[in-house]
Image (cartoon, rainbow, N blue to C red; front, top):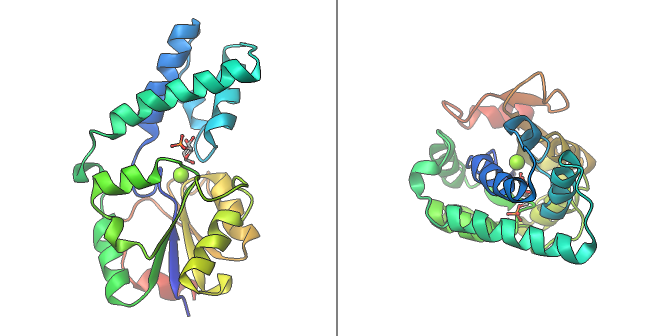
Length: 215
Ligand code: G6P
Ligand code: MG
C-alpha cells in the first residue's frame, strides 16, 4: 500500500518555468544573445548552476567561476522578484483538491525539489500546511537524477521507498524516483515521460484511486 506522496515543485505544483525563462532571458539579453523558450525546456529539473552552464553554452559565452557566480545570483534576484508576487491563482489546476484528499486519507505528503526558493513559493501559494516535510535545494547535495532528494523525503515522513509515489514533470526527476526504487507518476506529456509508471496530463480529476493503480 502507498503511504506517502512526494511532489516535485516546479512544473508539478506550479508553473514557474515561465519565470525562470524570463530571468534567464534577461541575462542572455544583457550578454547579447538569443535565448528561446525551446532552449528553456532543457533547464527543467536542472539546478541553478547547471542551468547557467546550459544558458552560457547556448550563447557560446565563456566565463570564469567568479563571473558565473555573479550571473547566477543576478538571475536569482530577478526570479525571486517575480515569484514574490505570485499567489494562489498560480497553483496548477487540481493540485489543491488532490493534496486535500491525501491529507484526509492519512497519506504522508512531502516536497522533493531542487529549488532553493521552494519555501517562498509554497508560502505564496498558501499550501505549506499540506506538507509533512519539505526537502529542497537548500537541504540536498546531489541533484536529480540522484535519488537523494526523494530518499530524504521518505525518511523525513518515515515511509519505506517502495510505499512512496513521486510526482514529476522532468525526465531527470523520474530517473531520481526510479533510482530511489519508488513508484513514479509523470505529469505532462506521455511521449516525453515514458520512464514513469504512469503519466497524467495534469491533476484535474485525479483522486485517491490513482494510488490503487500503483499499489
Ligand atoms: C527546479 C526547476 C529548475 C531550476 C531548479 C533550481 O528543478 O525545474 O528549472 O533551475 O529547480 O531552482 P532555484 O529556484 O534554486 O534556482
Ligand atoms: Mg519539475
